[in-house]
Length: 464
Image (cartoon, rainbow, N blue to C red):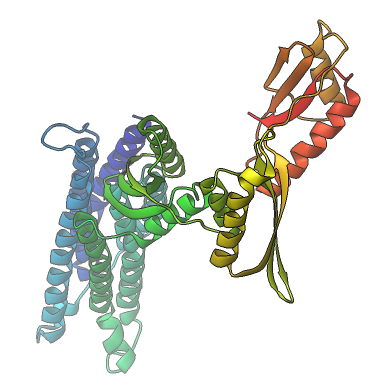
């Protein structure tokens, strides 16, 4: 609603100023006979029609989607931009024809311009209005992502240059009487008004090309390479676990509709996949306000993205856990060091074959010269604590963290089973940190907090 109010105010302001300038230029152009000013008056008349069309377009575009228009009514802004382009094209054709007629005419009066102070005043007023109006429209278009307002802003930016050209033309016409009639300069000054009108026509043609191309591209849903790159980078940076397989996007007015195909492990439950899709949609819509995103999940057997992931996948295939994994490119070749986690009550004999299969597969897949493993039990028990839990434990934890200048905890959870206790302290996540930086920070904070608190429970500081 706020965007619609901004667009409506900008459109109404454009209509009122266009009407004022049209009347002023038309009156002064008829009085002076200046083709430059008359071409500007016609230009402003079309500006008024375009501004009225923009006002109509932004109101239609604000209508909600319905059964006949499931993507909303935003394309009307692109249609209005295209209509404005055709109006401008007609203007430039008329100005060029009239300019050629005056230049080729044998009638000396065809080049006569009755210059007065009013001619200069109306052009100066037009310049001032167009500078302010184009800035206002450009700002509103940027805030609302409106194609119609953007077209108006580009249009009135061109008016600044065309008005400047007309100002040069009527100045030349005014100076013509001060120059010897037989001189080449007099010949040029007498035609300065016509030449300025041609300059206006050329500027209008350039604007026609820019606005027309943009309007047609939007209506034809042409690919926006910058938008695709932005979404692709967002997914690779923020959701690297779920590769983007296909992307389509279309702009409808100030709304963007995005369709994505994202790869997911086929083992995921449908509810989990749905939650991930919701998270991806929220991520894209935070980066692109006003966007509507639809995510299609494509189940797939994903290949590991790194040697480390491949080693862990091989271990899981053989029903073993992995930690303390290290890879070293030695002079002799790649060396792999890792701890394998096995059931604590099992015998080495019963796991000898899976361990050897793990080593062989890692060596084969990574072309490693040697794979070294250290066997550890995969279950670790919590230590027992004899001190009773104080009644103000949570307050004590918060006070200690404040003394260590650590972030204020969002939650503190204490779980007990007899003398075994574990305390999880949740703090807000710093998303700017890398995984390694985050691990080092939480490890250091856990050690400092464990040393500062009485030995009541095993302390873990984690992100919420």
